[in-house]
Image (cartoon, rainbow, N blue to C red; front, side, top):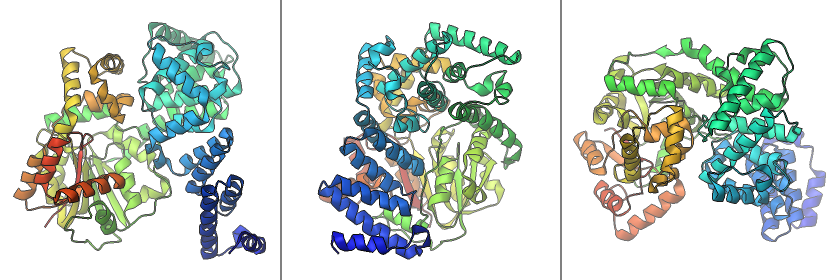
Length: 582
């Protein structure tokens, strides 16, 4: 069909609301083919028009929003491009995992941002002034939709960005302290930065001058609210950049006033949602007691610092049968299919703040999830954060893995990732979980690699030698000291960039590390079937090719041990793998 014929077809088409689903789907697919062809031929105006036709039929098409942003950026329309990129992140928050690519896009959209990043990194620890950072002031970048969306959605994950935001926070605090008037745009940016600081749990470095000004600001706000006096929004946003608002004695009074939408969003994040989590404490089922000494210490850490601080669940996820998912992840494993597409009973053992439990409910067809954890604070965060459509699929409960055998339940799938290595006897925890797994059942496990965490072990030794505590103040101080040493390599872990996650990474009360031979010995002892390590699919395919070229079996753990010995960073995150019970 040529272009003229396609135009005639579009003109004869009925309004989008009256199209049958199949017809709309077919039209969208054809439009996508046309749009990508136009891109390839550099007919960008045609590509934009065609992508926008798709959005008329399906406004929440995340891929099209992203593609449209890409074309508009190529056309030299950065602000329009940014709005579509931001929309794609709203629709599919899982795209935020592509953090490096998003940052590169931001710099392409906002050259002044890239300039400011380079200037502040070079000047650190000196905090640059507004004029030194931006010729046109903070307003130069303050209204960019993609930048605002990123700040409100995920902790920054690189030191350059962290240092720039640290300086911008100081500039905005000084403006609030001096009672300087700022534009609505800059006020909105201050609110987004306050949300970022809450997400990262105030991990940015502070100076004594900032601490003093925050104390004055807190006192002045309290006095004004108590006397029913006038209160500007910028000082509240500034305080929220340094301390959580729900911890302020006047938090309730803040909710009694009307604020601009951006500041009201901050109040929702920092006052309403924490209050909701506290309300949920009595609704969490207590399945077992917690009596083991190490379990109690781990429990206390996660009561103080629920982990991880995730914000948005993945969007537009189509659930698939568990058999399909495991076959894609473990293509070389001798897997015996479960054959279940409904009533799939899943245990998430050590669910933390619920991110894994929510993901399981989303991606596995027919999933019914019991998610347990030691920490009541983490469970309340999880329950509050669970999307409403998934709430009936997930049951949250407080329990210790050491006592789970007493609950009298069994499961088709058990997920225990990043948990057992925080137990006094990790293999004992694994044995207990096996008793809850049905014959033929699947287990997904994650252990820290001894080879892959050499720099983490060295950083923990550095911390112990210098007697750093694990309070937020000490964590902030320690991070800045580490960044002056070769141990700054730990910034490769995203956990370095929030207080709770940094505590989990470097200050954990109990951490054990595993080796492939130890995993292999356990698997052989219990006659389990090793199905394969889990990687992102592109990495998986690369590793398959390397094993194939060496004539190695992809499920041979002895070969994997040789490979890791030669490539110690292979499992720098964790060993994540699937096994099947006989």
